[in-house]
Image (tube, rainbow over all chains, first blue to last red):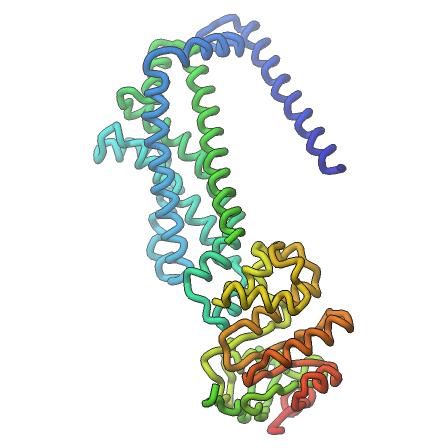
Length: 255
Length: 201
């Protein structure tokens, strides 16, 4: 009961905060009175209503989403595999340390420009998303492995549990909060970096290309509308992935 | 189970840092029998069990006769909290029928499908006991298995443990002589811990 009240209060406060931000935005746009400098939220909404009906809208989203999703999945698998290896063999952690530090510290724009030399612009966002996701997943999963309950590991040793049972019943439940935290952060990063890669690489038919064109033609309506589309899709994608994880864990608990 | 050997602990020593827990301790746990290990808190009972379970290595001395197939009821239950009582018993390779029947026998018939995290302390303890009883093992090590159970449940669980031993060797740590009597167990009393305290008994 108390929790529900707190939650309702939080929802009301957050909704009010969003409305306040929209009002401030609308007033600022009205004060500046320049569509190039700052477009009003109402104009963005009107543009969105026409944008989704334009030819190529869905194709652009499909193009970008498929590549970012692929980059995320590859990064997830690679991050988990490297974390598992580092947890098992500390030498692996030391071996890949320079790579992880490099990915974390080098600006993403530098990677994008370097990768443009190696890859076609069409596949650039796959690589950049992958690159951004790997260290986030790796660090979180490795922390989860390190924080694992050693007493359960001992139980597994005493009862001679095979590796797959240890994975299903001990390791995966322990990693649950680390997976969720890692996915939430990595998904946001993969969208930001993936779209940034498309803006620099300008692959034909991508969301990044649309944003780039909006900038070239100073079409601020379009720029904001596409940004809203990216935010919404990124949010939905994150919800989808987290829901799939939750579903997977629910299935696991019923085993 | 015919080639079970006595478990012989010979002059075993174990320290943790500067704290000496076992100092040349010796004992024999007869094959196919239940032996209760008693002694005051801190005398090294759990350390000895961990040595027998090969979870830690002795600093000196040797332990012989420990079979490969082991089962344990740990001092802390060490259950997989997200999974049901039934799954926790099945984890070790027990059949559904065996796991179900053992849990029901221990009074957990209504809680087979409930996640362990939702069970009370006493119920969790019984899940841990059921898991050990269902294990394909030759040696069962139980560290205060009946701790936290009410009198009626405790007696019932002791009966079940005794009747389900099936010729396996068991080492049970307890502080209660009545538990040992009900289990029909031999009793080994460990002297106080610390260097010089439990040498070569």
